[in-house]
Image (cartoon, rainbow, N blue to C red):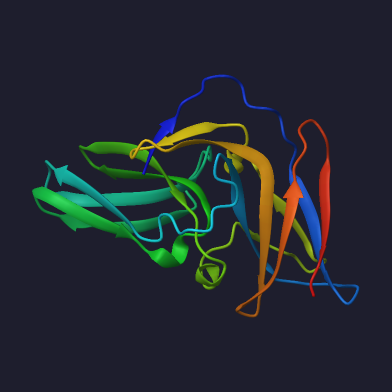
Length: 203
C-alpha cells in the first residue's frame, strides 16, 4: 500500500496523451491500452505489486456498504466493485483482480453512517497478467486513443508503508493488447507543456 502523496509542490502541467495504433498501415480498433510507470528509483519495475488487494476494516454499523475504485486524481469512480450488506466487526473486501490494470489507484468504502475514507495503492503486473483486465483506454475506429495524464501521477512522490519511496517520472511503457494477446511494448516520454502524440505500429 502507498501511504499517500508526500509532496505538496505543484506538479508539472501535461496535456492529454494522444496517439494512434496502426497495423500494416491501417488503424486498429479496440486495441486495449495499458501502461507501466517509470519510477525513480526503480525504473520500469519487473516484479509484480498489488496483484491482489484486500481492504480490511471494522464496521460499526450493520447495513449496506459500497466500495468504489478511482484512478489517481480522478473526481469520479470508474467502477463500484462491492455493494452488499455487512454485519458488525472485522471485514475484508477483495478488489477483483480483473479490474486492476497497472497504475496508482484510490479506493473508498462508505455506508449510510460510516465513511471509511480512501487509500492509495499501486498495481504493477507482468504483461501477461494484464490480459483480461480493464485497460486505461481503448483505441477507436480510427485507431486513436487518449490518456488523461492527471491519472498518471507524473512528478509525484510516494512512499510505501514498507518505507520504499519513489517519484513517478514522465516516462511510460505503453502496452498494447489485441485479441487477448500482448502485441507490443513501447517506451515513450511525455513532455510537459507540449502536445504529445505517439504513433504506435504493431509488429
